[in-house]
Image 1 (tube, rainbow, N blue to C red):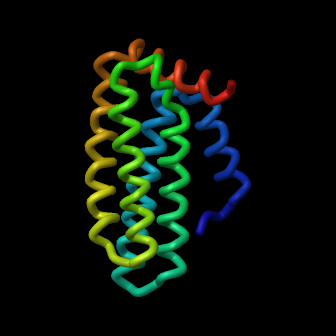
Image 2: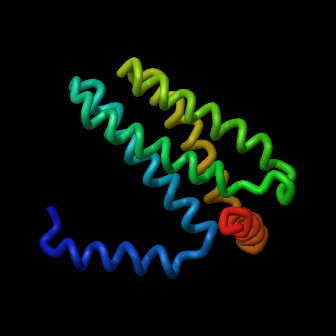
Image 3: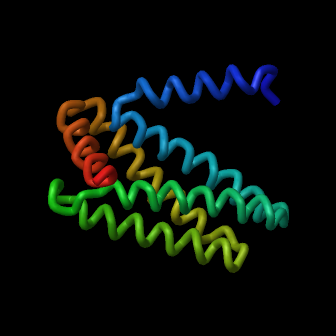
Length: 141
């Protein structure tokens, strides 16, 4: 696929280490969109192994986003946590039933969140940085 996987890996790692916290969150949403697109296509093609792999990876990312939230730091964190939990539930149901309806719904919800994070990053980068930095501190503790 790529001529030099080591170079690609190094590029990806360097991108992650130099990206700001809010930018990493946006990158997670981008990856979620890709994973869910692939999962939906795999379900349509009856490729259950691929669908399972992509849905599980998406669940892992959403779980990490959920774990990063510090419910005491940001007033909207409990509502965002509820959305993340609901998305995890949708992805689990989609994976168990191997139907795409739940994955499509989850993808739509995550796309809306991604857009909100992108707008916050552009409009209020300092505030976005504070929220993500606070969340990351709670994960490390």
